[in-house]
Length: 235
Image (cartoon, rainbow, N blue to C red; front, side, top):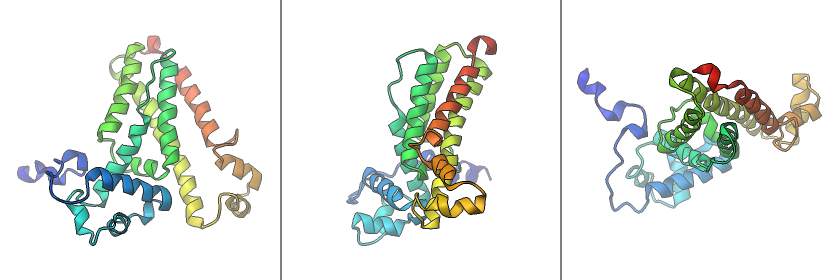
């Protein structure tokens, strides 16, 4: 039993295994991940397969992929962490709440631009280097603001869990509309009757550009959380 438990091949994450040694395979891991993100953005999470990736990359067989990435699950972990890298913005202006706002908005923005990514964060632990770096930035801001110990951990969780939770909720709506095969304009009209909601109200709720839409709700919720965090009361 001890031998199996220590085997890194069964630890459930690409980040807990050594990257394969360099080979003569024509594809780099970075090339494959970049292409996977394009496919996921275009076709959604359900349509991604290693066979589809082989076609996109122009390889003769899916075996060419496995020289660099062991399986689809590993590829998804690599892709979502690459997306999170876009949230590693400089956030050193203003007070600590301003800095956290910049970091939270950056993460929410990249997750909204890639709605498949928060779906994965709901089932894959954030073990990748970009996710860890993002967490460290949030932790650094809060630590400098005076949060300490278990209260620091709680504040970090409050911010990151809110960002991920909001993105997961928005992605669920996006996935529902995508599965319907209707356009974003037609879906509220068709679904409004079933939900007992006015189509205009439902359309506004789903539109990122509307003042009642997900981006505006995210901003309001984030302000409420940050106002509630007070380091002097949590020491």
